Length: 508
Ligand SMILES: Nc1nc2c(c(=O)[nH]1)N[C@H]1C(S)=C(S)[C@@H](COP(=O)(O)O)O[C@H]1N2
Ligand SMILES: [Mo]
Image: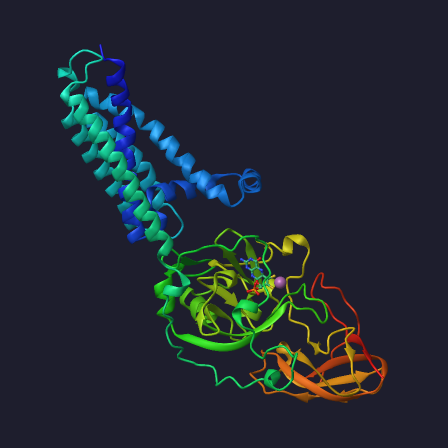
């Protein structure tokens, strides 16, 4: 007969050995590939296999704690399963060790079967198995239950094994915490040194923001750049863990690590992004200097097949954006961007990598937290916004905006500088901006410097303001001679149009 206290010890042996093993595997993964950590690999496999409605329910109920709860549940299940180990080990040590190895094997398989994983991703699970078995054997050696005297009196060997269990538990906690620390501080934006571009952008000209108060800065600081996401939280991705998979209708599907991406030739471009949801005169547009790899360099390496008409890009959470292949590869500088305004992409803007494609609205081009490029067809696959009725082909409509004075401003009479920004990315850039006061003739405004066709342009006009209430309007003419339309359209389904018009009052 085994006493109840011996049974408790037997039940604890497996979970404690497994915990030390998992913690050691986690730490090993933290130093190499965090996602290959036994706990995280099993956790993400569970997420992948969970039906979407259940996932949405979990996110709704647990919010940002959903990952913690998931990892906690995985740990509990594993530790519960491991309670059998000690009893198996009592029959034979090989049986007990085999039990632990089998548990680690589940994690190893999960790690290797993750997208873009390799055999090396099994290493943390192997480490976990070896450490767990050693701890189990060590604890058994401290204990010889057969020689233990009757219940109640703590024999020296029982005291030894209890001490061993305690030390091992503390060890598991320490190793696990070390692993956590290491993962959270590895692969952060601030740790990344970006390579210099082989094709740098020309020197950025000084904008009108120095001379025209209230005009939008020529380059939008990253912190002030508009943000449009389907997510509420800012995803925290690690660059060391990140992979870009290129698959679908390609001759040579392949996977890039972040280091491999950085090793490709980098280009640097000034590109203004605009959201299709931006209304005329609205704020969802920004200009930045982007650093990245030409999309065509990535696609050429894979060898695009001849059926594909769509680049379907997927973010780390499975959100999809579709881009017409013909537009993405027509010679414009579509890029897999890693840098924004001279620094790694901020997390809010897609760290570690995103797409930036000049001339197309963000919802069909600018995938943040990019992890996959799939060459496919519109007939076969549809993306997030396509399923919601938005257009699949969305060149940014030419437009212009008055930034200063503000709508309904109260001004003093005399000279007032009216200024703003204008863009005409798809159409050779801005040729001129015109302004009309109180519905009068369109007169040319003065343009600020140019940072290229796919960037926006600042403009201003000195207006001799007379007392009364006035209407100010602006419009852009592109380099193909086309004038911004006055026909009003709502953002849905392919972008707003119309003329930005504001009212101001000039005091006597
Ligand atoms: N993963 C992901 N990428 C995304 C989106 C998104 O919701 N999720 N929104 C898109 C839209 S609609 C726009 S306009 C741009 C906005 O980029 P920004 O937030 O960096 O300004 O990102 C695009 N990329
Ligand atoms: Mo957008």
